Image 1: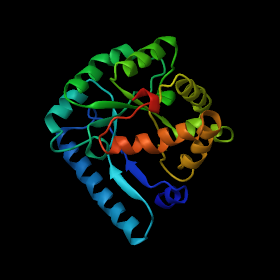
Image 2: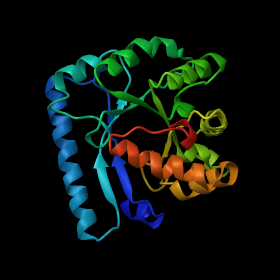
Image 3: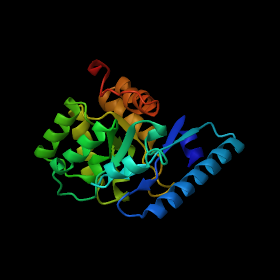
Amino acid sequence: MAQAYASQRVKIVCCTPHFNPAQITDQDHFAFFRTIAQTYNQLTALINDRNIDLQIRLGAEIRLSPDLPRFLETYASLFPLGLAGTHHLLLEFPSGKQCDLTIYEPIIFQLQLTGYTPVLAHPERNLLIGRHNLQILERWIEQERILIQINCSSLCDVPFWKWHKRSRISYQQARLLLDRNLVHCIASDAHDLVRRPPLNRWAFRSISRRYGIERAQRLMQINPGQLLLGQSAAVNPSSH
């Protein structure tokens, strides 16, 4: 996969293994993060040994749950979960389509109070973004409470729809979020080279054709780089 990214001229990848603090015990936490650290170090060495033109960073894709603020308060100093060690937390909603985002508002608020910036991972895949949820997302962004990331695969037209049943809805909802200017960054969310491969090149072309190359650069190069440095990211340059 590292070579696949490099072939698409991707320079930096943030590895974000899934993590759900509500599903594992305290003892499992240590084993999980020890395994992640070892794997990350091995991958870094392998990329260097093979002279692949790619840098990697470490983070996590965290399940958004009521247990998360307590976990961070207890373990954040031992297990940094932010993207590349920053205060940006990549958060995934549970995969329930009928979901009212207001139930997550207290958690979002608690995370903000402790200095974190939630980055909502691929809401176009996990939610039905009806009028109510869209209004909530717009309000959260207007109040600078969250950032939104969508997937490259959600921007790819046929034949990529055949990969999973949710793809057509994801495609439509990703376009809705982009049209409403609610997206801060676009990421690969790649898992392998077959069913969910890196599609950065195709997504960049798709965004460039529909919204212009400057916006493609903003969402796929500038903003992701700023997030990994712990800096703020705007949905477009004029929103600074």
